[in-house]
Length: 354
Ligand code: ATP
Ligand code: MG
Image (cartoon, rainbow, N blue to C red; front, side):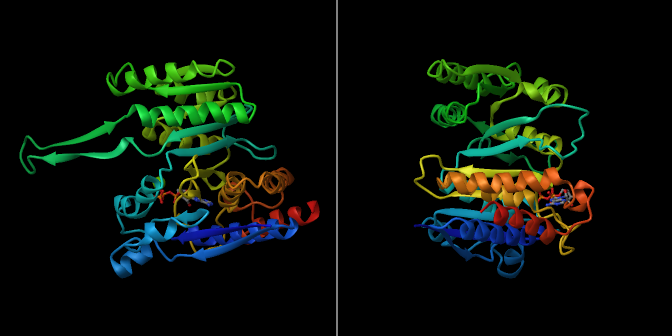
């Protein structure tokens, strides 16, 4: 009997709507699989909390979260609350405190889903560095209000930080039968940080002679995502480049509503966090039409991380079946279904499979 304690932060906007579908779906998976159960503890943190209490989460929030097996997050964001407050008040502290140095984002175009490209077999996995690099938060502003005013935003790349995320990418390739790891840099222009990245990548890749190591500049990589997406297998990139490329990837896989992500502490010393890629989507919040697939797929990644491989497989197949069926889909995918109808359809497939 495996019982998991999951901290749930639905957050704001559509986050609340899609997380409910994810939780109901996890319950359905547990019901279909004897020996698996969850205890969900909800936290009301996010931008609405901030507007009421002046803080995104409680002071002892990180201490509370530490004891959970995983964190399941919807989205944080609210019109009028600056993005840097929601980011630095909740998301980034969690990622950093719990050493979630891998941001894992599968980019897969499922049968039955129409992406913007005419053709292309898209099935890659992006490994984005999640704790340092361009988002280290180092820098400052000077000479405010003078003609000499300037801002510095320093990227911080450490050997330890790069090595561990690159090793994760190669280990992931090995474990999942993937052939190639592509490193993305801009070492022609970023002559300190990215040259260092290239050196570390070359050194790490020597430990994995069975996996092909490949390198691209980020500008070329962006073009190739569109023109030859099938050439990518596992992709490893810095915080900023990974952020940009994975949003491009989300568009290629049929829209941001479909895209899942995992913030992993691979050593399992601390809880990992699972969240759909999309934000709070204020333009459609409260209407019951948000696509829940990204959130449900994120829950699937959580099952995988918890070691519930069989349950994860069942859930993945249920998602793929509903997408392939093509009848039940939300408006962002050209359908007329509601958030709950899509969740229900996936749960129905789980029931049938059990
Ligand atoms: P944030 O700052 O939180 O990232 P954002 O406005 O930049 O917010 P999203 O909230 O992801 O980004 O919204 C971008 C667009 O994608 C919006 O038009 C939104 O309606 C749409 N969108 C986001 N999530 C979904 C979803 N789950 N289903 C359907 N459409 C979505
Ligand atoms: Mg955004």
